[in-house]
Image 1 (cartoon, one colour):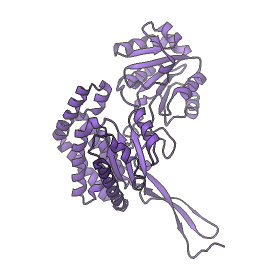
Image 2 (tube, helix red, strand yellow):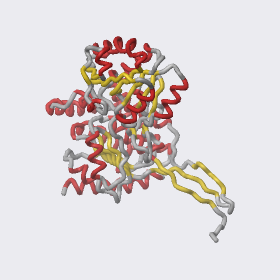
Image 3 (tube, one colour):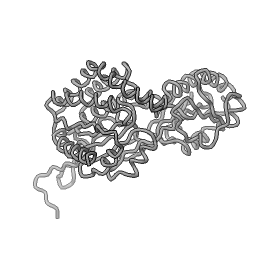
Image 4 (cartoon, one colour):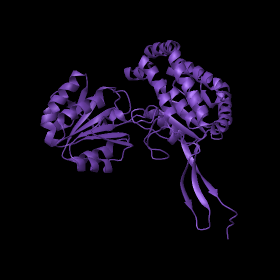
Length: 418
């Protein structure tokens, strides 16, 4: 009963707060975000001390290196959280903006007004930075938010929650606009997913298992972010030095995140020249290569890829590699095994780049750039709340605009319908 009553009361309070946040002027929202950014930096020592408690428990539980990496709050993480909030401040406030105005023959003027979604529930694993990113974006968009981080990050999230609450209080905004669920018990997630009376949208952020659980058990609409099976296709005639740097960065710079490359596709005309040097560089970085027969012929250090390797999200220093006959085969492979997250082409041909962009149905398509750039901050959106791989109601990185919707506004001067 404690879990249920806690979540229900949070949800009710968030609904009330969302009404106040929807009316909140831009300068007031920006004020609280700036206060929060400054105090995250001031309280860095406190945040990292609490984070160390989570890291100690994570090591004792035997969590993977990738999970521990996501959980760790470094000095750079503190800086990134604070700077992300400041970038959100610089984004134009979409709430109340009018667009697509047109006039009907009867004199009615029709417009669309952008409005907050209301109350958003976010369920996520590890990554305490999501707590700050999500709170900042939801507040900027005039929403209230309930954040349920993973049990492995409880101390970190509670520390950040205290700072967020103080920021809201100091700015005169309802503290209930941001709730961080203080319960490890997974039953809290089950209860949260039943609060359709108070919560408008659920955003799960984490592994595929978490997301599928949320989708299967929620009474509330869910914005999906499934796994990130990202590809880089090295085209014929590509600048191979550029391709080598892009592929290496896409895989090695941070392998445990959703925008890391999991499969490298190489046109057969460049495979003999490209793969030996690329393979050597990967192996020196500790990457395990699982390749098609042609890849294994060129790279003796590669092992044979199994069918289950092609759709796999390794989130580790493991890479599947396939030599393809042409771009058509590369696109077919991406369509079959990809997850609509991020896919890239390295090419010197403008027309082939345009074809790849048109035919690859992913939320972000890169041309001659690392997949690691599919990130709200890197794309100039400020912080992001996640990367939607479904097309309703957003596709790709979700920032402030994607946390709003529109309503119709009709202006008349006495018209009545015949």
